Each structure stands twice: as C-alpha cells, then as structure tokens.
Length: 266
Figure 1 (cartoon, rainbow, N blue to C red):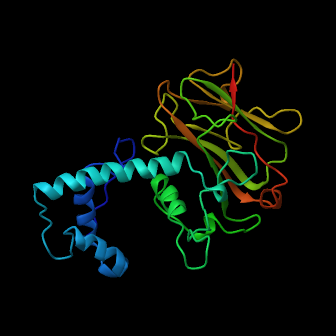
Figure 2: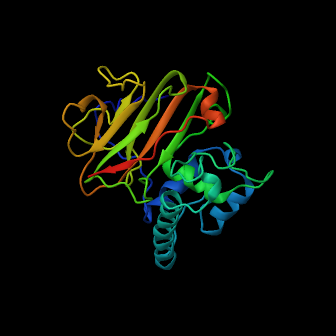
Figure 3: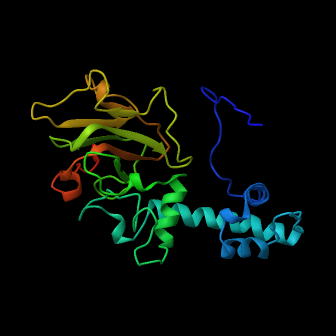
C-alpha cells in the first residue's frame, strides 16, 4: 500500500550526503528499484564495490574508509563543476555569467550519443528531475531557465552584499516570469524571514519602471521603497538564482532580449 506523508510546513533534508551514508542510500536504491531502471555498466560499477541486488552490502573497515573519502571527493568535484564551470557551451550569451541548465540538451549530449559528463554532473548536482519541455524550443509554451551563481565581475554571490538585477523591457513570456534564490549549500530555496525567496511578474505590488523594465534587488535588507522587488539573503551564506520564463517567446530564443548581469550595489 502507498503511504502519503504530508511534509508541508515541515523541515526536511533533500541533500545527498557527502560521507559513507551516500553508499548506504545508493544500496537502498539498487535493492528497492527494478534493475532495468539502471544500465548494465552502471550496475557493474556498483557491483565492483559490493552493491548488488539481493545481496547484503557489508564493506570491511578498509573499504568503508575508501568509500567515505570517495564520497567527499565526488561531492567536492561536482560542486566545483557546478559553481566554477569552464565549459564555454554552458553560457547562453557571450561575456555573460548566465548559464543554461542543459549542456547538450536535456540528454546532455554535445556529441551524438556521447554523454557530456560535466553537463550531466552540473545539472544533477543542482536538480533532481528533467523533461524535454524544460529545454526544447517551444515558443509560447513550456519553460526556459537561466541560472547564475556569479555577479557581473564573475565573483560568487555573497549573502552579505547588496545586488541589483535589471530585466529590460518586454520580458519575453506569454505566461509569467520569476526569479528564485537557492542556497549554494543545500541547492534548495534559501531559508530567510521571507516565506518565498522570489520575485515574479505575479508579485502583488511589483514595481515596474516607466519603460516596462523591472529591477530586482537582493541583500540582507530591502532598499527603502523597493520591498516588493526584493529577495532577502543571509550574510555568510552563498546563493544562486534561476530566472524562469514560462511560455517563453521568440526574443529569448533569438537572444535579442537578455537579462542584465547581477550588479553589486555600493
């Protein structure tokens, strides 16, 4: 029977561990999920360290030490690839820090039938699910995403500093747009005094400039009079953001419209 657990309003952790318990969770997946959901090569890698369906996973002290270090190194490697990528294909515009979540499309293939491992790692370190509708060009339908963890100078976004993001006029959406902030550590939405760490075209009282552009502000305190356009950040904690376009229009795909870079405010 199916057991439904309501987690609304309850804190819970969705971050994969970076220690030995990672392998215990992986073993649980192998034991509980159909083997057909994983390819033979992947299952072979798992078997090489003692994870096999229908068999106990009981590594000795030596292997536990190796696996503990491997999990930490793997996590650090994925974090470096995600937050300091050197892959040029990751960036949507020239001379910009805005990246696309999908390097090589939703299958992460920059060559036919060849998996781009950096693109694959980048996406799945930050996210959990993928669908063609999140990546394919469908004017006025589906969604598109731009992601960044850096300011206009290429520095990591700092929860103790104040920033501004300028969205030029005629934001290319049929439905709506949003800017949502995420924690670099948890990769989930940042936890602050605000219930929702976001600003969107659906925000009641959103301030729109005379030319139709919108300025979004980030920082520990809201600029006076800009509260509706502000997302709170936490000093000492890094953050990243996703610009989401729902029902994206042709200027997004043609790159004739582009968001501003995130600027530090003095």
